[in-house]
Amino acid sequence: MSAKSKISYLGDRYTHTYAAAEKFSHGEAELVGYHTIYSSIEAALRGECDYAVAPIENSCGGSVTDTLDALRALPLYVREETVLHVPQHLISVAGATADGIKTIYSHPQALAQCDGYLRLRFPQTETIAVSSTAEALSLATDPGKAAIARAPAEGQEIIEREVEDVKNNSTRFVLLGREPSESGDKCSVVFETPNTPGALNRALALFGDRGLNMTKIESRPHRSELGRYVFFVDFECGDGPLTEVLGELAGRTSAMKYLGRYSRV
Image (cartoon, rainbow, N blue to C red; front, side, top):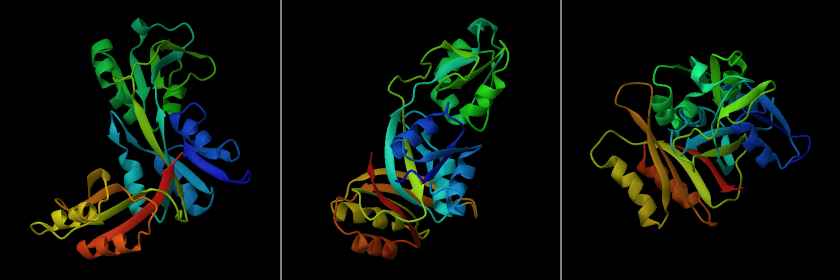
């Protein structure tokens, strides 16, 4: 990645996605923040940025559906992945106390990661989901308002540290680009099968038949009609060619999209 490259990400320098973008860039690329996950991904598609960084899965909150839906819909590929420990802090203006907080803002994923804490510590407090933890920080403007985020902005301070429910809380981030990578030991695909008995079984049996370990499988609504689904699969592909595997999978499914081959950094 060159110093002239641009990487889009969600929010601003206070978000976890910014920290992931820094890791992918190795300090060489220009990082450009966007208001939502989808808009940051679209920036790479339009050519405003060379790459996009997006969260795709959290160990507590599960998959980030905005990223999955964008991968299915847009002609972009996963080029690298990384996993970051993501502590969440309760943040407000300097001098605020937890007892005075009436409203807490954060991204839906961060709220999910702190659900138990919020129910026990703030059972009567209003929680409001916003587009990013950066937006949450911008709304925490007085002692009655707080955000759950990675780090405080200027004029703010951490009221309570590491409020996530599970202390090894981690998020997997992906680097997306317009061209696929030609190397890597992991692969992602999304496919649909006919709505007939055993169709999904036959598709998934391919991975076991070829000795390929699936590391994740998830269904998402097709959106065209109720009861119709697509299936996202991540699998370990080693360093061998993928042409035969992908060709056979296409033959066992009614539609299949290759999402990329990649390594972890």
